[in-house]
Amino acid sequence: MELQVNVNEDRLNEISEKIIGAAFEVSNVLGVGFLEKVYENALNVELKLRGIKTFQQAPLKVYYKNELVGDYFADILVENEIIIELKTVKEFDDIHIAQCLNYLRITGLKLCLLINFSKPRVEIKRIVNGIGNK
Image (tube, rainbow, N blue to C red; front, side):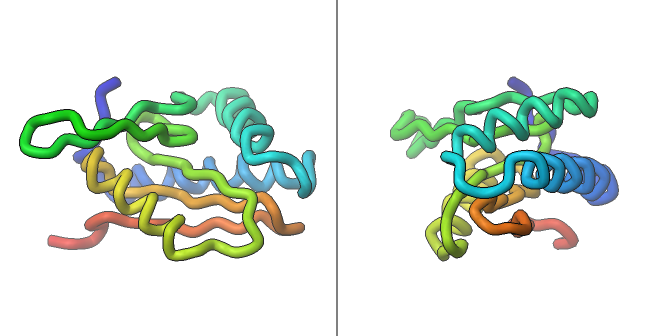
């Protein structure tokens, strides 16, 4: 898996708009009340139906002084450029944002979409890592 860390902002915005559209479609079809994994699988299917390349449960490795010290898994990696982290929670919490920021930091990617399917209208938060910084 080769991550695309030097992606321009316009490309990220274009892909994220497609992801958001797919998330709303999944929310409209399934509604609320399912486990997070159901929404993950459905969103992965919807993105693929829209011709978007995905990698479900993408492995992310954490190194300390060149030694592997931990493994995480991003719910969905899109086009090797954007991480999607799904939740089915009452409200986003600081820990969810921190999780996304950590994923961005260890991968060098610029954008994570935090998506909550437990509300009647899907909730989406863009977590950025250095977009617009010079």
